[in-house]
Image 1 (cartoon, helix red, strand yellow):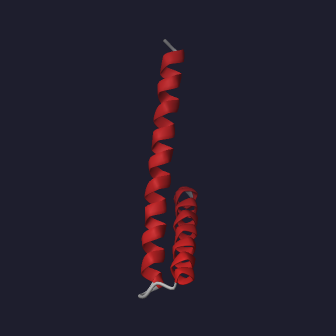
Image 2: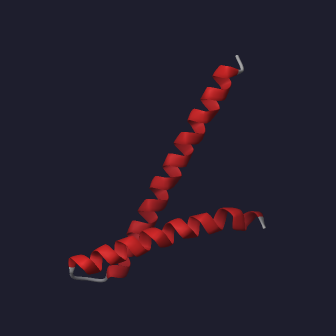
Length: 69
């Protein structure tokens, strides 16, 4: 059950990025396979969201450490 708590949000972020990348590729009429652009966009979005969450978590920990001094 613990794995689902992590896996479902990750999957949702990747699928959202995939949908956006695929749609933009198709709308632009770019040559080539839109699925590749979709997967790349999904993975890039996952990296960005993960980086933002890690950064936010570090700030929260620093703020708590300062308050507890």
